[in-house]
Image (tube, rainbow, N blue to C red; front, top):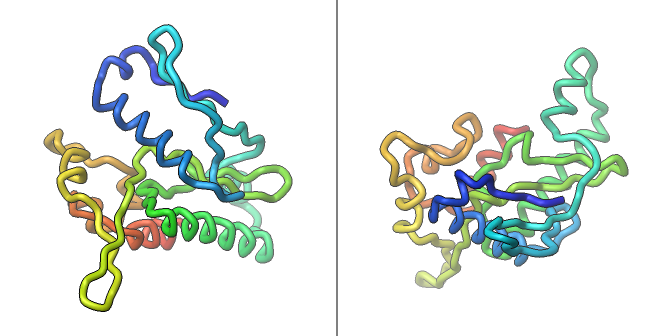
Length: 182
């Protein structure tokens, strides 16, 4: 599948920066429950990311189609575990997704879950503070993401309190979003 920025968006340097960052972040991840990136490039002024094509439905589509019937408990637990494993793998690689929601969870027909859309992902560093490791992000980068007055990036209904306030985030912001998703 190709992810392409429309011309209007491609003219915005900040959007191009985020587009390239998403590709870099996704390319650093290797897990069966995380979308696979194949290539990033530009052709005749069009920026693109070539990613794995996932045939299936989003978690949002599954929830809408299942409104009148209960989801099978085993299937539900399997989905939850796969999403948690994907997030744990991303966090071990120093990546915070920052936009976990049903639309970014794809369910393949064979039962595999794929976490999609790392467009808001953030790379972290781990540093030793005393005897304890602490995960940190660059707060100045967070502020750049919120530099337009009144604009909050992400999906408000799933955001952790610190993310919605534009404060530095760590893996706990994905845990919060995952809890809301559950």
